[in-house]
Length: 406
Image 1 (cartoon, rainbow, N blue to C red):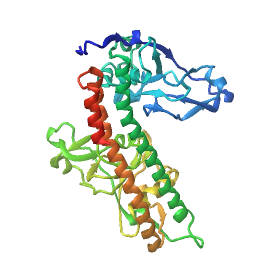
Image 2: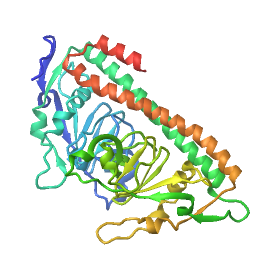
Image 3: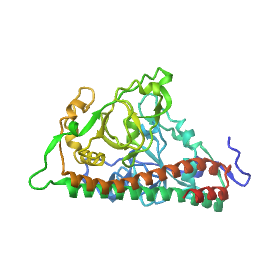
Image 4: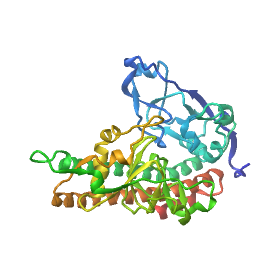
């Protein structure tokens, strides 16, 4: 039990908030879909301050099978594969609807700030993940009664708002970096299309992609041998790429030792290696920003002299359908290296390749810098969040830490 300050009140989440369930309008009713109302699902609840969704509803759809909630409503995932690794929670910034895999909460009592409520729940993410039940249904589930029993410490309203301001400044900076990264990525894509999307005079020469880059795969050292694991060498799986919001891969979830690396025939791949997930699913892309090894779910490309890694990355982004068309398999689809290496790829003139790569590299380095800064800010936020919400860290001390970081 947390020892909250004497000036704070202690309530359960069931006492503090009103609860609502969501739903899915009939997909056979086109008049329900494609409107202006964001519809949040477990898959689209990927940011804290919710502004967008993968699908949208009309007003009719939002009232037939789903539920509308106003801005300032907390949404969190109660069912889905994501619950096996993370607790997804956000707060709406506009009226939104949501699906049955989420729950919605709003303060029930006066004196409870909407954003503070969301942060107070978020601060207990590790405990909440411990409540996830996977038995019997494959996906993770959270029991509503258990969640309603979650105990929260609630300081006086002015202190709540001061806490929200400190944490919000970090989240706002992280979100600003995300927007900048998106703009920079779009700029690289636009200049690639302008320079290489349509080759001049009927076409440039082509070559098999396997002639332009070293194309390798990876493997998994035996998980039964402890000496292979928990070292200092980054070891990537497609799951690492699934969590990325942009192209640079700055680190991996798991690491191997030198002995573990010796079990992987492709060895240690250099910074700048282009990573393409080749199965389950096909098409995640990243560029390694650390030397790493990879598992068997990848095609890894080390660019040769005639093309740059950024050119290969953007070419693959623009030709994923062609890559996927080369997949085969009985249990799951996979693009083999043997099928991938012969893919023909345009080879632009050397001068054009050099000038575009120089420009794109400048933009890409800005992306890396923004992602590194966001990583540091995320670590700081995640470190001070539970301490602020337990009263262990006071607002003034947190403000000093944030000022030094931003």
